Image (spheres, rainbow, N blue to C red):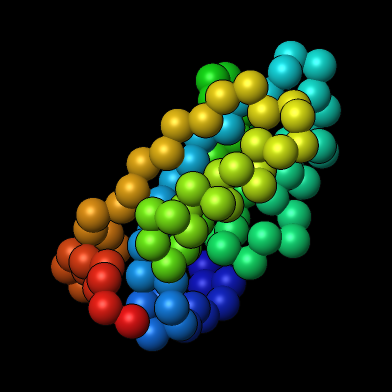
Length: 107
């Protein structure tokens, strides 16, 4: 059933053309609620998914450039409970029947 509608946003025009996913690993004693809050207040974070297994969370990011990506990852790691990260930069996105979309590196 349809639960809503979605707007398509041109993130390059908003100044954040780079899309990435960062896996986060936490100390074993970290509560799930604390994991979900690691990126609270960071406008570059599109979503935080807490997941079962390894890693503990997957963070969807949209940033200006690689330096900005590094800055955001450093901010998430600053809390002290993050024991490791792995970041994957999106090259292309396939959604439904629209065909692939590529991030534009020009703002």
